[in-house]
Image 1 (cartoon, rainbow, N blue to C red):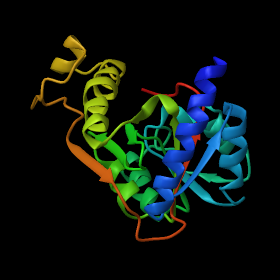
Image 2: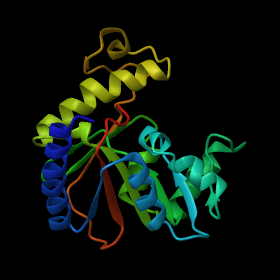
Image 3: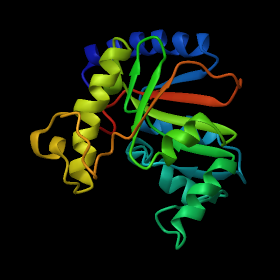
Image 4: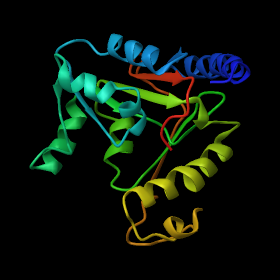
Length: 209
């Protein structure tokens, strides 16, 4: 990545981390995907039960593959015969892997969900939630984060899943009530009452959508 962009990301990440700390959440900065993977594995004790929502960023840094191939009990929703049981098991998992649709510079995390298994697990259940977030997802404020989630993340995900939503066809949010909409639940995480539960690794890269 361009040296000037990297320097900007380092400085911005420190601001985000301070914001997270003020909200009883932990933040870390990784200069590369490899550093992000190393830090993530440090935060997941061996033998832990681990599951996830639809976190492309966790795939992109190699975390999902690492968890599958190491000494962890990975609850794989995609491979499970009973997907509902696998999703319910997430609420009692040691670690839940996720990303964010957007984050603010002062540490607020914004997510939109269709089935709501991801946002519900972020809000309550798993003992630890680990976010992998590319610096491309940092926005000025909650309004900007919501706009990014609805006009960048949602249309791309709708297209990725082959859904018939207006945003999949136009590339931007139409505030629809389509049966295929993935904008069913909005979660704004502005504080954690449980110290040590929410961890965010900010990565000096463009990850996810």
